[in-house]
Length: 149
Image 1: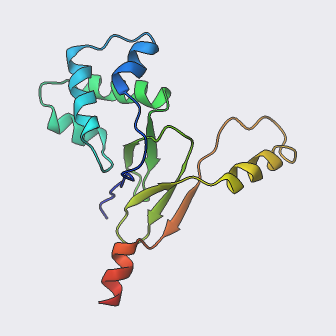
Image 2: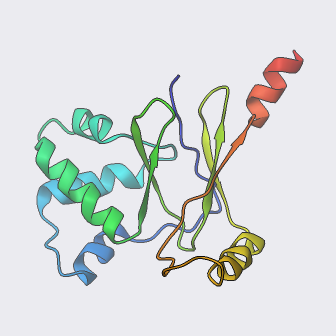
């Protein structure tokens, strides 16, 4: 099953070059090539897809750059049902993901009720909550439409 990550058109995208510079990382030519390619992405991507699209950029550079961007919280990492890894450009605010159980399309959403619930759970959980990931299994609109036809 191929997994696609769809980004909402209204999702605010951070300036990846500025993010790396602000974190004290050099923006080398290969990193700039990766950033330019990511800026054109409207769907999710794997490190392998980026590596294939940029034959002049070393595989290690692709993985290191994705790791830096992940650490800066400007890309999201999602482990797919088949064990693969996909990335997507993150919206500025914290969000969660939906995953279509039929075609694998990944979307994102934000909900304050979930955030309130997690703050409440903090009182019930021993230890400090330092993060969370929520993925909701759905049948996407395209698959719903296809099953009606």
